[in-house]
Length: 582
Image 1 (spheres, rainbow, N blue to C red):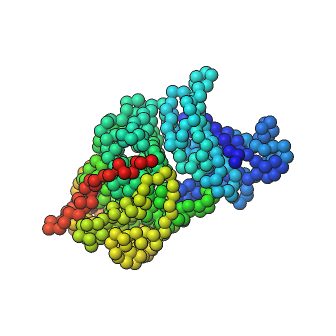
Image 2: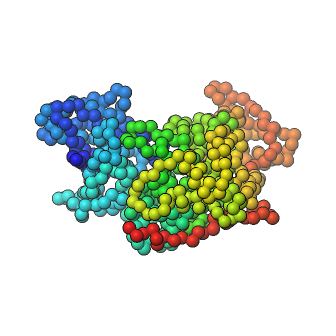
């Protein structure tokens, strides 16, 4: 089998440019069709990078420029005329990357630069990769190195070569590189490695107590999800206040994420962002090892079926908070406050009147416009709705079995699959979910999910919160510090916020002034809130007859009920030793 070779140059990543050269085996005297990835699993959409490719040139070994043209129907495909004496085509391109890069670090997703034969099974296309970075930079990836890096003659750069793999695995194995770099073993067996790059050297030195929390995260995830399905796992974290986006992407034996600069050194910030780290690690089991059958296409051109994202993302979202508390990454108080806020956010999503939870996953590839997001439910509600759904399932199981079984019993069996393995994939369907849940606690789970997932649910699912012994409600004051004037975030369907507000009670509009007026009208029952609105060239005043005051969401334990939520958040006894025989 002939192997594709890709060489990536990251030395100009700070200019948002990544250079790549791809050597592609071809059949002489033919038209070769190459493609870039289109459907990226962790993005759940056709978010391929074709629009960011520039300077593309195809040539032969002898540097003869070859004619190419884009497929007019599938714009990610390039058709290249191959002469009769040519068996290798060399593609040179620049990838324009406007995120995941700063002057001091870069997170490389191979989908931005790779080309490969179209209409082929990507798991069967062999490829060998190399990456060039400034010589003082650190580099981390789950790909296997081939020896020590090669230093350039001017000692300005170094090139790392990786063991051959296939296109499917390469796309799922990103690179983290940066000038302020740290590498820390998380577990004693060396299987779990924390790699960070930061804006400054100090923040690349991760405190030992944070590493210990991550070690407990590994143990608690094993306890909940069973044996691992990787040989080693890399936590790839970019710590920067210049990333412009704090979030992460899952991969089978690594994940990449960006956190604030002090995200691993300040316990308060880690309390806020630790769940993100847990979420991406959980995905190694839920989303990568076991994934919906519709998320296992043979190439990156086949559309993904998102109808089971309420499991893929929803279950991961439920456990991100639970395992964060169990491992010490998040306090129970923060968990409860976060759960209340997310429940309140869902309470304002009027789109639930017409759209089901399942459909928010099926339509995950639709453009996420900010306009009327709560009416269209375009914000991928399977994340937050999934938290309440699986809390409902967990508390139901605990109640019906008198606390003898829990959702952990389901996840250990379903995602652990009995033994530790390497990076394998086992697909599932709803039928498999139902069958496995019935082994834990018998129920008409199909009818349960039909009601709460397949059909629109016109109200927020509070059953799990209430069964856990808590109630959700609103108060006039915040529990902890909350954003003050952070800008307009949401506009409810048919609400006054759909217009532009310019004055409140005659004063220039801002949220502090608006909040003060809402509080004042709590007592003045005969006086409405007066707002001045501007739309296009028109301006007018409206009166809102509202006297309910400010509303801050809370959940609290109800006296006289069993505090099941505290039991859910309690640390599980981990037994990882039996998982590491390989």
